[in-house]
Image (cartoon, rainbow, N blue to C red; front, side):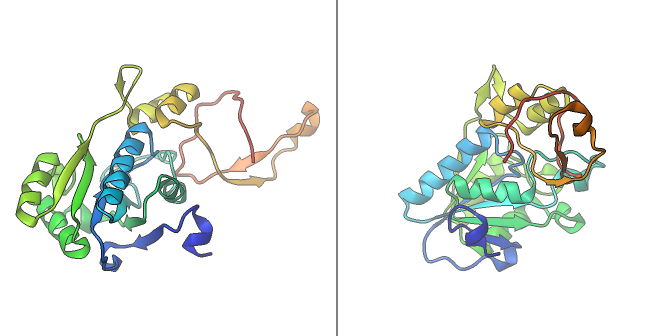
Length: 239
């Protein structure tokens, strides 16, 4: 299935920075991991898309697969708020022109922040970079917005930092959403996401308990990497 068939716009999906196509217009990069695409991520990406339109360029959003935390620490199954496919669909819906999926592995984790930025400049010739206030990158999290600004002056790209989005008195974050879901606070998690939390999977045969309950049930098999809310009874929509 082609990218155009899978995602709701003609967003290009590029696997590996080395395959980034040469662009004839300015490139605005949105940098982050973007697990969950919560309200803060959406604000950041909206700024990047806006800037790309203003300079008559293209917005490219970067994401990692696997999630860096699964490589850096022994994260258990049930960690991700969005699978890669879910993230790509959301990127397209939010207006990105390109999505670049970078493999996060042991080689990448030891790449310095300066080396990573030089590679980005060489491969993308970006005109602008948009990141969050707490964005860090490179070996030992050695790069941040301040370093980006210094390197921008050196390599000729602008840096814009998106303001955090506060919900209930604190910034929206993937960590807050995971904590809420693990505690069964699905409504709170959904407020931070700006949409209802969703699980996607295949309906599989179960133990036939629906026959004894008197109403139909469905057993959903979801990827082991996807975070499932705490045990409980929830109202939801199915499609």
